Figure (cartoon, one colour):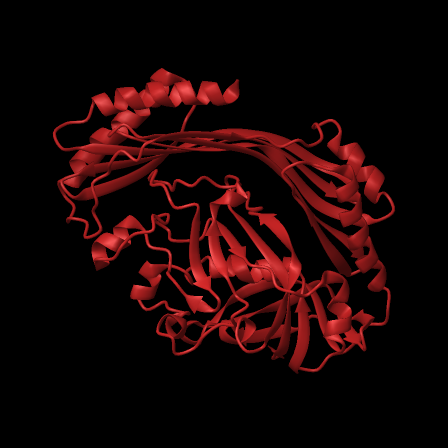
Length: 444
C-alpha cells in the first residue's frame, strides 16, 4: 500500500541522515505527502482535471543553540534525495557557525510513536463528473472537487516517529443567477448521495430567492443571522494571530481585554481545540503531542492561548504543545439552543447572511474585524425573506459578536475542512454553529 511505501521510504532516508549527525547535532524532519485529484467545474461540466503527487520534506537542523530550516521536494529516488538532504545538512553545519544563538532554542526529544490512518468513502474519479453534472445540470455551477490521501509525518534523531494519514474530500461550489450567486459546500467523513442531494437543494433554494427584487440597505446596525458558512469565515480569520500566545506577547493582542478580564464574551461561547474531530493529527510539526481537547474559551472566559514549546521557553510559560505557528488546527465552537428551523422566526426583521469574505482586522487592539457580505445574503421582514441585498461592508468587534450582542448559537453545526490548495493542500478543520446577533455594524 502507498502509506507503507511512504513509511518505509522515510524510515530509510531518515536513518541515513541521522547517522551523519556529529557531536550534539540533532535533526527533525516533517513530511507533507499527498496524492490529490482535482476537478474544476464550469456550467456544471468539467473544464479541468488534474492529479498531483508530491512529497515535501521540511528539515530542521539543530546545533549549539542554533536552528536552521530548509525544505525539499522528495523524488522517492533514495540516492538522489539523500544527496540533496546531506548537502543541506552540510550547509547548515557551516551556516550555524555564523549565526547568533536562538532565544527560543529547545533541544528536541523523543515524543514517542503513533500511526493513524483514516479512510473516507467517496465516488471514484470516473464517477465524480457524472454525479455533479446530473445533480446540477439545471444550474450554472462553478466549483472545485478535491479528494485523495494527505499525510503528515514527524520524525527526529531522538527516535520519534509519528505518522498520520487522512483521505478526505470537499466540493466547494457556487450556483449563479446572473451576477448573483449562492455558495454551497459539502465535505463529510463518508460521501452520502442523499445528504449531498439535500445540501444541493438547500443551495438551489437560495438561488431561487435571488430572483426576488434587490433590496437597497443603508449603512447602520442590524440584527443578523450568520449561517455556519459565514461564521466559518470569522473563525478562520481568528486563526491568524488571535489565539497565539507569542503574538499576544508581541503586542498583536486582539483578546487582551478578554485575557485581563476587562471584557468577557457571552457565557454561551465555548472555543475548544478539539483533535477528536479527526481531520488533523494530535502531533504538531515537531511531533509534540497535544491533549485531545484544549479549552481555549470556556463560558465566555479565556482559559488559555495556544502556547508552543518555543514560546514557553522564551517567556517562561507552560506549553500546551501548539504548533510553532500557534494557529488552531482543529477549532470547535460549541452549539447553542437555537433550532435551525426557527432562525427566520427569531431573526424577525434583519439580515440573513450566507457568507462573508475579505475579512481582516481594522483595529487589532479593540478586536475589530472588517469584511464584506457575499453570495446569497437577504433582507428579512417578519420572518420572511423579501429579497437579496447589495454587497455591504461591516466593521464589528469580536467583543460584540461573541459578547452582549450574541443572542444565540444554533444547535446544529457544520464542519469545514481547510480548502487551501496553493502549492499544496492544507490540513485543518473547524466546526461551528450559526449565530443570531444584535446590532451588527455595517459601514458601507
